[in-house]
Length: 169
Image: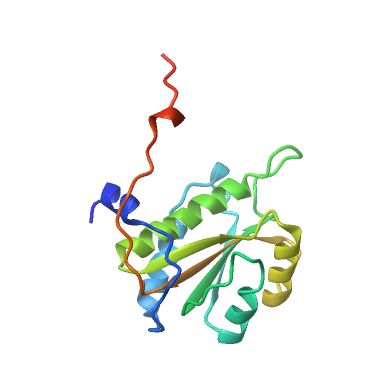
């Protein structure tokens, strides 16, 4: 699958088979995540790979949008001790979003399904996630990614709309 095809094929999967995911595939997902760009190469991310069923069940209740079942969850966090931050800008958000998208695309390329559920900036979701995972103060959870073998088929698509494009020449 080439890159453009992978981008179009990546879809939010909400139904997963129960089959466990091979450790080698998980490692590939994390390597893809850490290949993402980051401001001044600070790499302010941390990845919490959640195999534990009880923790995954608790994460389902983090928000009304996170109530899904999958054999694996990865919580992408920003480490504020490593981020390029100023009073006006928190670049960890962009950095961790790029890493998250790499996980989603790598999942598709590897024949896995994925679903990105936002946590940040909802304070209650952030707090619940921090408690469930026992995160230290400097870790801010950005998103929860469910991963597994898809149990639903979605067609490739683009949502291209010329009305969103503005050419300045």
